[in-house]
Length: 264
Length: 264
Image 1: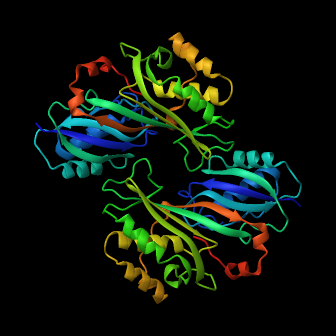
Image 2: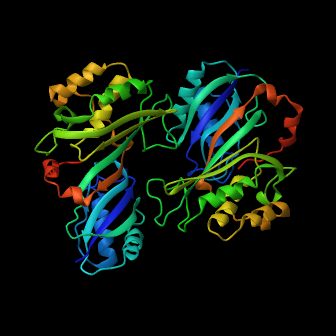
Image 3: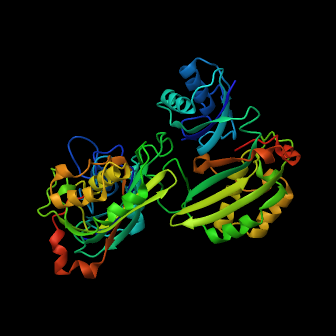
């Protein structure tokens, strides 16, 4: 029973999120339906990150098993054909080892959050950015962001609905950079708590407005209390850029610590 | 009668193009309607470039005259309010000199064309890129592009419908660069012939596929015959990035040469 690894791009706007749910169309559901339309098999498609309603992906990764081995190019083309007209495409398909798991084998995830920081709302990038009309000081946001890098108890930065057993996470990257009217926030970690990236962004944005100092961010982290951090930034600015796998490292015992992760 | 200069961003997909026409909604028409809704004046909004159906803009420029002077922030906010729900926004409004003309005072225009060069169609960038599934050699495209820089008779690179009296244009920039699956083509000139950028892209793409040599491109230019150049690339990959004005230079006699320009 061959296992396939798919890399997937989607526009999150019309979906309730990655995960199949009763209340509307999901990316997982659309993929499972497309696989069924292609080969008549009812499969489970397991994703690396359970992106929320409206969150986008350029490099989501998922795995599935098919009864019979088919060429990867056939799998990619057929699934893409049956995904139409959904804004979801498989950008790559590959054969994976039998013990590969898109979620549990992942060793790093990278998200990008885009803030459009200008008076006028977006036209061309509507649905892809968070529009913040008041001026944000990106340099100070970048300084505050550095306080959050590293291994911390991120209890202040996860939603009440987060099911992860432990709020301990290691944030490897939290870069804030301005490019004209756009502020780009690049975030990397092995795994994230539920809504963690969006709460980090919502908090840094308070610093950018001058409402919060860097010390306020340090205090929010230390408080380990969701009510002490900033608001959850809206989903449309968020995009899952890439998921990394390092199959040798994945077997290392330390990795099990975060296995209960619940993604953005 | 104060003159206003507006910088405008739009998603070209739902429009018949910049210019007001009988066969569907135009960006110019939406702007003129929004100005009327705001202040009750029937004005003409003059654009720097008459973008075609489906072509986008991040930095279109237009001018209009109002009977009474109003603060630029009021003009911007009110026009944006009345533009909703069109994917058009005024990103900047300024008072302009009485002899400023968005089209005729322009001293440089910059377009960007995006090709998504991978097997899978776009999901997140649907409607923003031209999908070319066969591999393109961007480095060779960049070399061929350099043959087209400078002042030439671009008769091979304009549509049959082009109304410009002269096919002589000076191409200042034609850069081709790959960034992952995206090929970015940046094009700059004082003004362009109708469909010039899209025919340049359609031609370079033949070089990228290996179907044309660099010499074929030189021959197409020398032929001064539209049937000798490549196809017109589709509109959705094209975006008007910026229009430059240099009011001192605009008064220079040499500039009149291209006054009959017809934009993309």
